[in-house]
Length: 174
Image 1 (cartoon, helix red, strand yellow):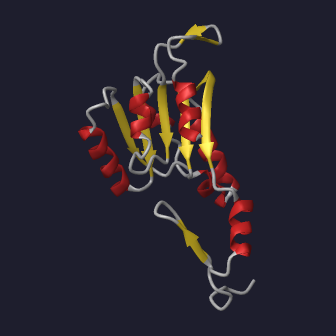
Image 2: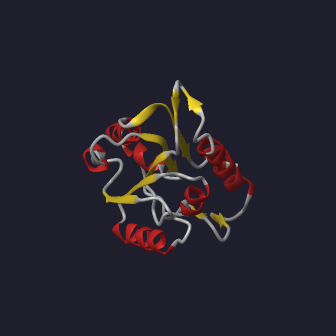
Image 3: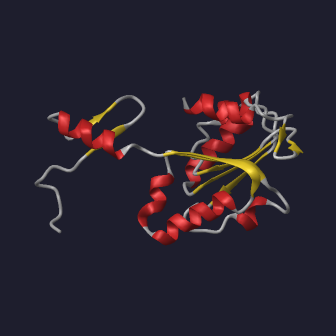
């Protein structure tokens, strides 16, 4: 559903939105990791991508993935920085504005403190065009707790994700 929803937004290129023609979207991918959404961006006809992530090794993998993707016909810039702790705006480039800001399965990291959450939201919105889109996905805590309570194990997942809870003996008091 996420990919289809994102692609629907991206495929509005060349249409009038809020009184202006958008030839192709400019995308900010916050907490982009190893650039797992590269195929989505390639298939969506974007014209520019900025990816940012705190993990330098993940960004190196992202750059490698981008450089070897034949369908990545758009230029890209990668920023190694904590998207929740650093103002990224000076690193975006002069005058760049984004049609789409995406943050997939990383928003919850910003909620460690109000200051970190505000910084992530600042980075997401400071250069987002009027009429632009923010697309974010976070884990559903209710589903996670429900699954924990329904099972007998403190660990569950599949080939894509896993969740492990500490045993009662491992938990810190207070």
